[in-house]
Length: 542
Image 1 (cartoon, helix red, strand yellow):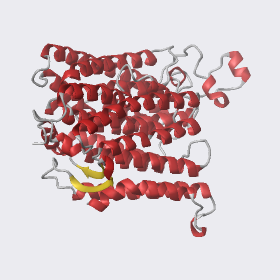
Image 2 (spheres, helix red, strand yellow; image 1 turned 90 degrees about the vertical axis):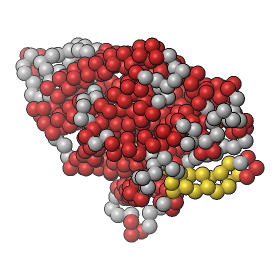
Image 3 (cartoon, helix red, strand yellow; image 1 turned 180 degrees about the vertical axis):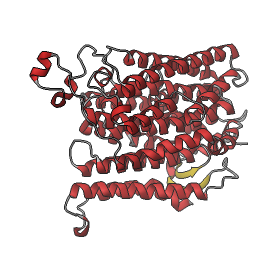
Image 4 (cartoon, helix red, strand yellow; image 1 turned 135 degrees about the horizontal axis):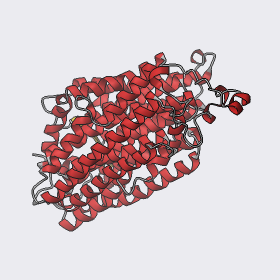
């Protein structure tokens, strides 16, 4: 188990270095670009296999206990150790990260985004995977920060070199926001380590009672500093403004990993560091965190409604990005309740959002490849998508992703949001119940608004309409919209014929759809892992 966890973290780094080296003569093949993409599929597949083996070998009877641990002194003078381990909180995130990265590598093998060398693309993808996996596996505050920062550079280059319109602006906005947040977070982590005399996250989590070496003031300063850095990555309103631009400009696989994995690093940090290590400080700031989360839920939904309305020239990819602000608001609200119910709901919503929004970004990226645009007015115009009639399996899967995202009972999106609101109904002792009831009502309003904009999207894109919004639907499909004489005479134009789901798309997207159904019908599989670990975490390691 120790070797498996070490392999999960280290193998992507080794694969990234190998991707940049010249391929051996027997492995070059006729197309070196395809060979390196195949290398990416192989390495991420091996990491996924190791993560699944880790999950199978995990002691499910004791999910609160750290397992597969490695604890080696690294920088003795500073007390920094290479400390790895997993429990019921980190294991699901670890497996989901390995799965999403493998599916992204598989999709890229058949549909490489336009841009520079495939070698650099694969190497960056693997470095990104290594950083995210390490974030969920390390148990030392300094190593957590290093892993947290490790993902920024590869994601910056994925957006800047393989992204779409305004990719340079989006990439710089992403890196500046997250780096500034990380600098503040580092100060909080160092404050905890210096005041307590250790950076070990397990030791700190079991020493947070009345005899804790961290005073109330230190905890307040630490949670404020660490919380700002984590809130930027989460993303919490109003620190979210980098997210829509980054998603809109990123290539398809970049958007999938950004939504499915990188956002989870921020919320995981709240659960792993802020809640157990500085509970007094977290208790003080919890109402403010819940307030920002509730505003974010409503704000994200209203922004999506504005983008979805007719004539708004809304971008479907940008709409899904704003929906993430709302969905991650439920995660933050669950954490802010500081109750086992709320935190379990937050962890469940983390996984559900990764599966569902990852699927939606895959679908929207494929829609753009087929139509050359994600403008909703053009997709809903006379020559627009109308996917049910032109690509029924594609339309059906898009409708499934939208319904799962709005939280339909029986699918994964329902349980996390419901448990987060249950936690807000009865928050931890000492927190204002009237305030949290208000936040719960706002969250409930957010679910109604979410259903509204997603159903509008399904109606316009999947069912189609005869609307011709300002700017029209025809300009997006120049070669198929008809001749100049047709346009001049107002003749009816033939809608473009588009392919339905390809085999590689089935392979890349089916696991996400299947897991969305499985998690919705059998939530105990995930909650059985997280609940004992959460109970111990909130109980001071007892």
